[in-house]
Image (cartoon, rainbow, N blue to C red; front, top):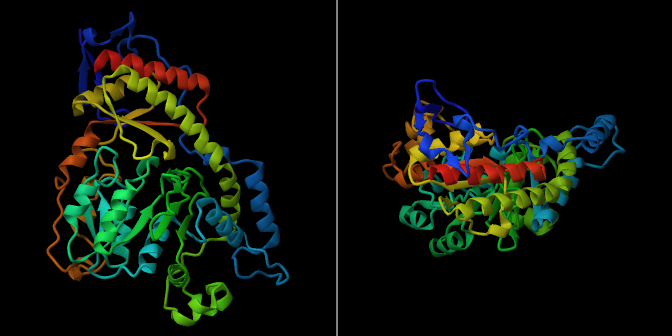
Length: 456
């Protein structure tokens, strides 16, 4: 008798099933749960909102302090004697934690990317290399400043493949955008060497990797600009929000101009503490991406939680990776810096896409929240093949701007990065929540051993 199971861990169509034969499902005399055996996990998976699930009295008190002050924007309020700004404080503390002299609070991670690109002078027709595996906000930010995203393969780190980056550089390339995807730092040594060779700037997308590091340096502090998201799913959260890092005073000045349409009115003291910068560089019109005081108050408290959150996730992930490695049945995701991993997820690769689907579904039956990163025909905004509007070069204007400004023919299609698709179709993903108990981790490790030994 064959048992039918869904092909995908959490989103599936009843018409799409794979089968697991009884000969596959015994290990140590215990049948897999997908075939009627006992579940490995005794508790449900906790929600994967690392910082969000920690919100408590400290966040509540910080927000109430701002409300009581009635100063909801960093620059003014009804009581002119109040000069304290939660945004100022959060920026200073974030910059110190990440090892950079400057930080700028913004309304979202996307706003941080757009502002960072603008601060670096990226504009119409400039090509920016972005990975084929990242949230759609990364290439969309490039389009927002008039640039052209050059979609580029990832390798078994699931971050930018340096060889593919080198192959995609043209005379029109201005920037590389490494994305520290699912908490894992990109191969920054290789990417920086390429950038230096070709006189390119690096803008780090660290939206999913707050707290990660690369060879001792916090991600986001390595390139010319680093961008973070504080959206609900991220390591620390304010619901929505973003942060930009830079070590360059001119870049900070330009970012401040761009993120605030009233920047010119704020005065030299706010524009930059270095009078030479204000005297040398002219302000220009900008947007409105200013961080509110309530957002910053939340962010400062969440920042205090960062080390504890990342530390717990790293501890849990080390156990789970060891359990997978011990089976010698699958290939773990390669980590450019295992010690610097933010550890929000564990990913391994099976030999075939079908096997990945079988493994993921068997793990779900065991009570483990597993999924395959890409199943053809199922939509995920993190995978370039699903960026329908970008692949079709649809824009908000009849002229087709910014694609109309491209300096060479730019064509996209859903099969342009076969290496990326092959990896993602074979990739089984598990969230690593900081709220897992020791028992949860032990049971998950047992489920991994049980399923991989049986099916792989």
